[in-house]
Image (cartoon, rainbow, N blue to C red; front, side):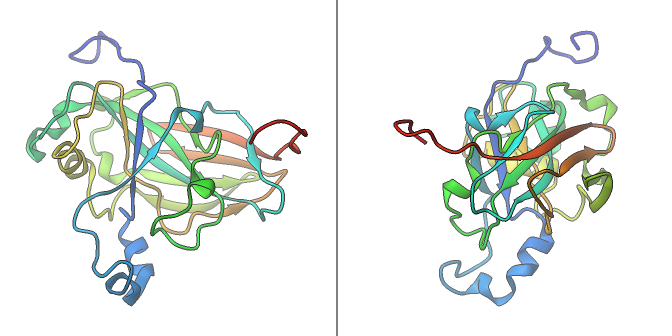
Length: 231
């Protein structure tokens, strides 16, 4: 990568931040609720989630479904890999701070609302699979128009694109770096699309982003807790 990118070869830092409600159809699905309590108004700044290291997993890792859950909502998102320290970056210069892109899985237990979703529904072990191969930004000339697909058992069941975002790649990076400094190797997720499908135990899922990468996983039942062990 050092021969392609204008900075040293990069490794992921393990810090991943995700944009919630960044797909316009997600806001549209809220309807009038977005102007009522507890929202009161559509978000004016990026709504972010933090995906700690315990959520990260490589392609092929099993996705564990807790007992009693009907399955997992399986979404795919574009991960923006930061290439240099990004603090108060202007929109016009934002592409200069992008090293490349990775495919991300944004996996959750079924969500009733995006407003303060319980951590136990989102922040579970392995719920943020990530491709370890970074696709250099030079090979992705238009990150805001990439095909994204979720497949279940060999059939593509959910197809969207990285377009129609509240904040496109450059704008999201600029707005987030306005209030927090991003470091080389950090990943900023553009966010999954509305309508992430439900997959069940025993099914195989594919998470694909055109020109960036593909992840493959099998859903398995979460092992029963052994007496005396913590959660």
